[in-house]
Structures are given as structure tokens and as C-alpha cells.
Amino acid sequence: VSERRSVLSVEDVSVRFGGLTAVSGASFDLRAGEICALIGPNGAGKSTLFNAITGFARTASGRVVFGADDITGKRPDAIARLGVRRTFQNGGVLKKLSALENILTGLHCATQRRIVGNILRLPSAVEEERSSIARAEEVLRDLGIADLRDAKAEDLSSGQQRLVEIGRTLAQHSRLILLDEPAVGLSATDRANLGALLKRLAADGVAILLVEHVLELVMAVSDRIVVLNHGQVIASGTPEAIRNDPVVLEAYLGN
Ligand code: ADP
Ligand code: MG
View 1 (spheres, rainbow, N blue to C red):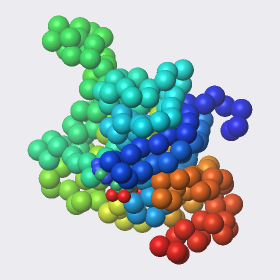
View 2: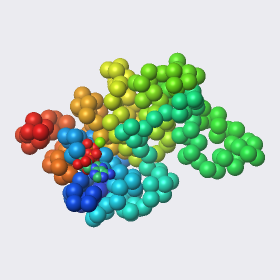
View 3: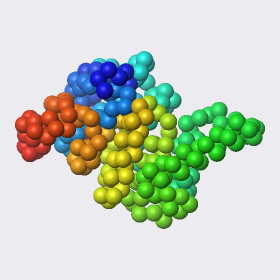
């Protein structure tokens, strides 16, 4: 993995809220096909670092580089347009739409060209619609919820809604996907399906940054784990190394 090209480079990033330093000099890289988990106690700065990468929080110092682009300080929509996809910790589904339609909304906003194509009913647009539906169905299948294709989101359990929401992000072809606590509210089966899908995306070359409390999922899918505590990276390594790192154990047990 180490020879593969860098997709994301976080260089000495700090984020401050008034007098509080939520992220302090954090650095790490993410390569194509790599799954990296960002873990740490509550309030460690994980979501803030996510927000700094995706343009929702202003960096006080440091640099964020996506592929060849310096995205430090760019707006969220500009970063999204470059192909960085993310979920939110308390995101949501569009309740009146079906599971399939929810996933399609993610694919549709991914291309503006198609809106024009749809209005003009270009053959290319019809073809694109067909391939979007096929892609959405594939994701539903991978997440183990193919049978919920036409169910309204509001009629699904909270775990199923969560899967649909994650599916909307994962369906978008992207080089970098960031997931903030995706396993919250998921059953063991749902988690296993989610883990398998993340592995498959990584095998296709997608880089994945995962903030997650469910350590079982983290240990099962991650190539590397970065540990944040009080806004600082205190450890980084393989799941095996992190599991046995006394500094990490101290950070978790000491809180
Ligand atoms: P985590 O996701 O690891 O639980 P957060 O990134 O949410 O941690 O929070 C890190 C620190 O920054 C916490 O002390 C939190 O209270 C603070 N914080 C987060 N967002 C804001 C904000 N918008 N304004 C002020 N403080 C914030
Ligand atoms: Mg958080």
C-alpha cells in the first residue's frame, strides 16, 4: 500500500474555536485503496478534523491537500465538487422518498450535466439514468437491503435509514470518502455488511477515512488507525500495533 499515490494529505492542521484548540498540529496521509480509521475519546477533535478536511471548519494553520489540489480554506461545495464525499454524524434521509430514490439523489447531485440532459431527453441522459439505477441497486444489495428498494425511508427502522444514508454517499464514484460514525444504530449484521462494502470500495482504489466508536468495525476493516486525543495525534499504526499501544490504552482508560 505504501507505494500507492497519496489521495489526502493532512499537514500540521490546527483548528481553534475562540480560546479552545480543538485540533492541534494533526498530520496524516491517506493513500488510494487505504482504509484509515480516526479514533479517540469523545471531544478529541475527530469531527472537527473531518470538518477541516471538508471545508466546514476553518483551519487556523496547516494544509490539506487532496490529490494535486491544495484544498485548505476552500468552501465545502468546492471541495465536494472536486470529489470528496462525506456523511455527517447526524445526517438524515429524505423521509418521503424510497430507499432507491434516496441513493439516486446522491448520484444525481454528482453530475450537473445530466440535469440539462434530462430536460432535453438526450439518449446519453437516459443511459446515465439507467446506469445510476443499476449502481444504486448494487449498493442496496451490498448493504443487504435490496428488499427495501421501494420502501419509503420513513417506514424503515433507524438502522435501515442509516444504511440508506451511508449508501447515498458510498454510491457516488469518488476517490475519497469520509464517514463520521457510520455504525451508530446498526445491528451486527448491518455492520458486517457495511464493513464488507467498505472493503470492496477500497479494493477498487477508493480511499476511506472512518471516524468510528465501534472498535470491532475499526479493527476489522482498517489498514491503519490514527488516534486523536485532546486534538493531537498521539498514535498511528496498524490495528495490531494500536491495540497494544500503552499510550492509546492510557488515553481511553484515563478519560
Ligand atoms: P469528537 O468528534 O472527537 O467527539 P469534536 O471535534 O466534536 O470531537 O469536538 C472537539 C472539541 O471542539 C470539543 O471540545 C468540542 O466541544 C469543541 N467544538 C466542536 N465544535 C465546536 C464549535 N462549533 N464551536 C465551539 N467548540 C466546538
Ligand atoms: Mg464527533
